[in-house]
Image (cartoon, rainbow, N blue to C red; front, side):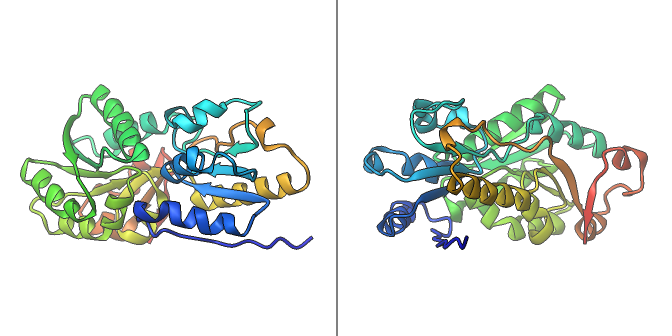
Length: 277
């Protein structure tokens, strides 16, 4: 059976989120797929309470932090026909990230996490990772941004304050500046690596390393969930779908240019990294 799908993107511009949902609903789709916490929170809000589409909420870092999902129910059965996929694994990715940073770069103590307080995903992932790093004895430089244009300035301030590592959580504004942050870190003296919680920023944007689920697999799981719903499976009865664990991803080119420890060292190899060029 052929499946017709339409894709709409706000290009990370929150002011366009309502617009793309409105446009998508004009087609009266059988299934509405909402990608990300902020879009999900809007799509399940009061403005669309009379919509009767089945919904897949995907790439939700922490469903328990999304009030609209909590009101519907995280665990099945839910009050509405909604399936949930998380981009955080069953294993604690924040603890894994903190352990990874401490193990492979033990000399790093001062860490800046760039995030904004207006985005649920951003603040939640930044806070959770900061707590795990503090438990390892790391000093956190709270690098709060107010908008996309604020990122380079706040990052430069953090480096001047002694940040030895810049961290990109799940923040759409900071991710847009990943290439800039990587360049800033490379040009600093001493050099400052960039760590990310998503694999694309390491693979494509020059972050030195990261701990991330496989976002390609999340896309595949989302598609399979949609096909299951089309075949008759009830989304409100599905358990939250998660990958088992995240992986360490290292950008070999960036890592080498930053003169970071040998990738063949036991402390790195024991973590079974995925190394990309």
